Length: 234
Ligand code: PGA
Image (cartoon, rainbow, N blue to C red; front, side, top):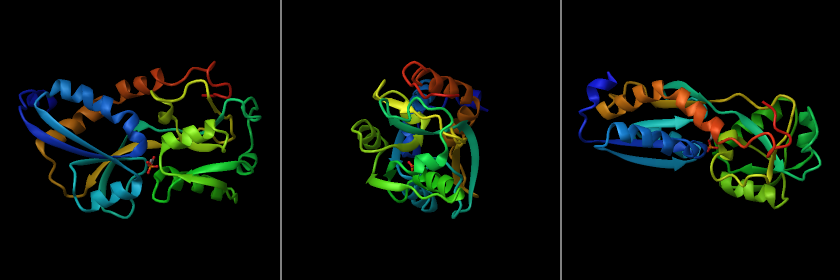
């Protein structure tokens, strides 16, 4: 039980998370480290493909991804919502439209994450399920670069709503009201099947299982308000 581990003096926790998880994982770790000050934490942030490689090689204690691993035999459990939203510059003609058809979005120049990104895989799936193909204008290797390129007028994109937390250029991005969006996704923690978790990793997992409410509050509190995002719908 977590309370038995209060005396946990030292130990290491190695986490590897996909890029969008960096918007909440450090704050989550902050609370954990307050509870267990002796624990030394390392946090690796990469895209889905890299995180899966690390999982397959058993390089870390725990992993956080936007979709359970498929290729690797792993234990995976959802612990938090991770909605995908369509983002455009605030002055975009679609920013004040209601219930925009997905087909209309497919006509816009699109800013895509790099191959190997989980966000990209999920986005392509949504469009291809409707028989639609994205008009990719540019490929960018980070969520931050995509947000800046949207503001720069280069196109629109689909990103996790978590990317609007903290460093979002407030007031310059609009969440479009697109049919079928937000797409409900979840955050999963995972580790290779049969892996013997360290005591610290076990403590972190039980902390994670109790923390979701706190996390949801965090993501809500840091979410831009309706007034800042004209097209925002819950
Ligand atoms: P990504 O993963 O950082 O590789 O895009 C995010 C996700 O899978 O939700």
